[in-house]
Length: 432
Image (cartoon, rainbow, N blue to C red):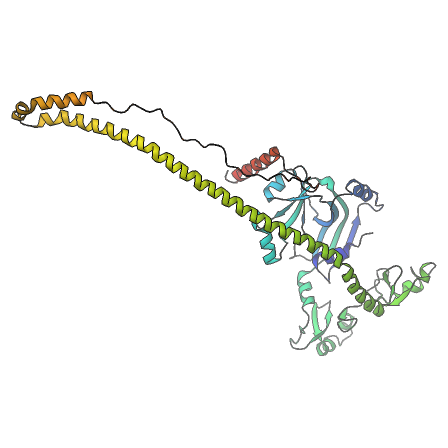
């Protein structure tokens, strides 16, 4: 079956984690075969999910969803057809279906703006806040329910065991599981001197290059003595004499000692690392293309932004000229009307305030001025013309002249509008 313990250790970068129980959902493997057939051309990942998964499947981008303050954990081991993911906000991913051409989402719970995600990852190297969201649960097949022991504090102490934790001075040579402490040679002998503490399981770092002896999975009380180079599994002496490798054809398999296996496999790991360079090269090549794409896209953004800003400046200059011309007419008409208003008020009020002798002396002038005022015309009212925006400034992806790759999918206008409307409604709901 599946080596779940190794995957847990790999995902959590652990050396002390132990698998307590695994309840397999489909021992025959038929459901998995049908699942793989259905999604054979799509990207698959192995993942661990919370035991109480809901409508949406959420799993860490790379890791195991556990509470590190606890020691005992329960998760579900799955295989997921993530297909083509779309990076989106958590609100959108948890409340909407994947748009056409996409099968899942990648979200961030850190609140980082979508434009700053890559720069943040480059700066911190932290992926713990990123997760996959799979809206369609048919894309998830549960392989097993898993219970395991993982003590974060123990893990940290075991990885930082260079100094004796008893005296605090000597160089540690062993790690005691019972005490969860590292001991130097003197403290190890002193502490484990009596018959009771001698039972404690200890790992001595000088054996097999700071490794430990492991117990046989078939005979848990027996230490592994051999490694079957044919089956690629460790076995103990009891397995060799009485157990799985005592009868034909396993009895003919090539067996090497545990120490020899450690040295040989350590060397093979180095060789495998060289073979894995192909995958690393592929990833770096892909990252290089993405980096180039990012640079080109950012340059494109800057050019579009400059064009928009330039058109905005030009439009604002044109608006300023139109406003100026319009106000030239409006202001002149305003002052014409204001002049007539003031003149009438003065023509009516002034004769009432002066001495009658002035009226006798200037009556002809008064009549002439009043006639002049009454005959005065103001500019005809202009039709209320308004300034309008001619055309609409907009941005869009320019269609490529070459045929689009199947992996490149353009969102339909209706789907984009639906997305924007959904996100707006989600934001508005927060204030209710």
